[in-house]
Each structure stands twice: as C-alpha cells, then as structure tokens.
Length: 329
Image (tube, rainbow, N blue to C red; front, side, top):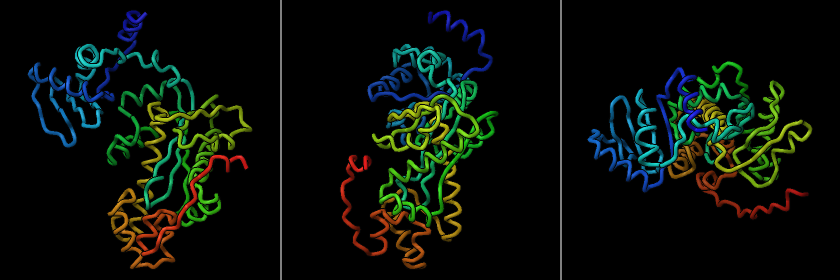
C-alpha cells in the first residue's frame, strides 16, 4: 500500500516541498549532528541552534528546543534519504493524508493570542479551510505561530488571507472594553476567552459551516461549545491542536492581528511596548502610570494582571482558586 501511494505521489506531485519542520528528541538532534558531520556537510552558526548545516541546495537547522527546520530545493531529498531512514526511522513525508486524514477535511480551527501579555487585547481567530488550502499552506511552511518570528507571521498571515475560498474571522475588543468584560465574566479569563472564541466561530460559520472544528484546549470545561449548541456542528478540543494546519493558520491570524493592535497601542503610548508580562513590561507600565495616571492605565493594560498592580505601586489582591464546579451554576 505504501509503495503504491508513493508512486501516486510521484505521478501527481508537480511541486516539491522547499520547507519541512519536525520536532526531534534530544537524542535525534545529536544523531543528526553526527550523521551530517560524517557526511562532510559544512557547519555554520545559528542563534539558539545546536546544529546547523548547509548541504547541496538545502539548509538544515536543529534548535536546542528540538525543532528542526529544513529549507531549500533539496528539502525532499534530505528528508527521504537522510532524515527519515537514518534519524527518525519514520517515513512521513508525502503521507500526511494517510497519517492525518482529518487535516484535509473541511473544518474550522480556532486559536488565540495575547492571553499572557500585560499589554494589548486577547485576540481570537477562526479559520475555515479544506484540503486544497491545507496542502498549499503546508508547501509554504505555515505552522504554529509560537515557532515563527513576527516578521514571518505577517507574511504568512497575508498568504493565508489571500488563499481562495478561505474563511477568516477574528474577535477582540479595545483594552477598556476588555477590562469591563473581565469583570462582567466574574473575573474569569477563560469565560471571556470562550466568549471571544464563540463570536469568531459563529461569524465564520455564518459564511461556511463544515461539520466540525478544532480548538486548542485552554480549559477542560465546554465553555465555547455552548455558543454553537444550536448549530449542527461539533467542536472538538485537544491540547497541542496547533499541529492541525487549520488551527496553525488560526494561530498565525490571531498573532498577526495582535501585533497590528500592539502597533496602534505603541503609537498611542508614544513608546515601544514589550511583549509578555515580565520585568520589561512592568517597567513600561510604571512609566505609563507616571505619565498618564491610574485612570488611563486600563487603555493599555490588562488590569487584573499582577504586574499591572505592581507597576502602580499596589498590592495585588488575593484571588480565589478557580473551581470547575462554579461553571455548573
């Protein structure tokens, strides 16, 4: 069966992959380094990489995290002749439709961005796509936004948006509205995020309604499902859902939208605003507090963050541990 599939792939394929990504174990990364060194491949320095080599028409970078990035016209030859037989022992390239047939079914993907950042909104994105779109995106190397630089995010978001037939919807609010909604939803960020996901999903389903969708799981409770319970639609949840190309596309759209909103926020603030909620974010928040006062802080920050309180010289309130039983009320 595999041989016939490979033959069909060779006959039907008109364009070879020029990019390939894979997660390797630490042992596999070490083995890859030894194999390519033995083959005499020139080595180069790449930031955060354990190994980086240049081959004939291909560049191979294995990062400390285990992420492997292969680029160039020789990508397929490297994967099929070196990576799969010598390193992983798994033959996956070209068999995505066999190993993950659900990726190629028409379905919706949902993901969010900005949830852990002190500044800027939380953005939900929903993408609805089918098999042809997924194949195109995989050729372009589209993957989970957390593994891509900001510059590449914007380029990939444009590619996704320009894909014929794709449905894209986002949901987010101004910072003032975000802080109001956080209180309205009982100071429960998961409930607020579920509402945003529900809005983006329903807006997308109004344009095209596949049978099912996939959400990167952020809670064990069916908080988003209630927003689509009147539809003939199954919303699945699982961790690491961004391995699904449609969810990965949603993660890119969400991040690109968040980055655009951050640019607007920086223009309003008149300074560079850092990502995250660490020391740099606290320093900038303290500066904004000095310039604008407490009354304006809700136009920049998620006011429930501990960092926001500390930036204003306040003691963060003690919050009750969330109890899933509350959701049943």
